[in-house]
Length: 370
Image (tube, rainbow, N blue to C red; front, side, top):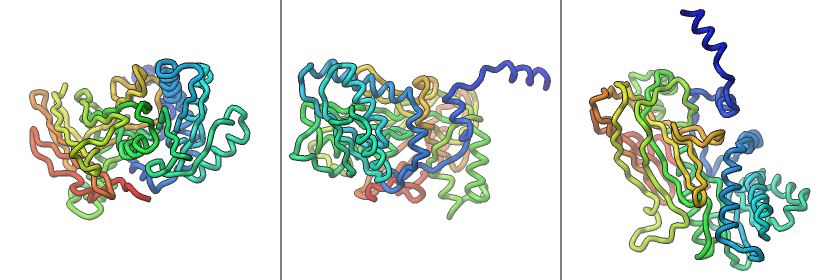
């Protein structure tokens, strides 16, 4: 038996580039980046920029906008939000060239280290002559002379779609920077949730909590009810992913709704499991419509080929739930919003009730200010 298993491993095809890149992070629990206060370093940008599949989809989406929503000779203004070190700006320029469109670009970035790289790239590339670089918070930045954009392009999506505060950033930016007739890339995105069973992730949680069985307060509790970023490997997913929260951009202000509540969400999801399983938590992913029929997906069983930028988000359960193939598994998710923070809360209500995880963001939240 051992020899035969060895034979199968030798015959297995080599891992894809995406799988090879994920290998060092298999089942490693990482807390999400605080997008407003933590600045990405050069090594992080290098990893992001290697995701050619993602950038190819963005280039296709921008080209589709140019070819269907503009005409040759139009003066087209594009704002790139979260320009990083310029990879997304380069894709916009390439799309404009392929469609023979004349454009001007404002590249907005709040990371001062990335802004240095952007300015160096502008100085060294003649094709960037119509690019203006600005170090700014895109939620409050005012364009020169009040000029607004025909197109806003953003690369702010997180592992769960909205966990890097993309709704808050894009709502404010499109309200301030986009023409009434303008478009946003992405146009919309939906987060997805699927149950997951994993002895490895359970043990990693218990290690973070100190003593798993006694994690009823303090550090232990915080570790057991915070969301994590993880490259799942030794896992079993007993049911397909279901849609959770959806956002559309641009979103015009909703009459009668306070802006602080505009991106709060609630969803109850009911899963029919394919095989009796001990559910340790839930994996979060997303699907985005960039423009028209151009999409991106990190959803299990429907992932865009070659995508490497995002690992799923893992929402743990403090106590695993046994679910048979005759049961329905019901989980409730909330995206809560205050004037200073955004956080998730979740709980299982069937086949048994779990505690409410992360109430009032006590163990994890995303800060809206620096």
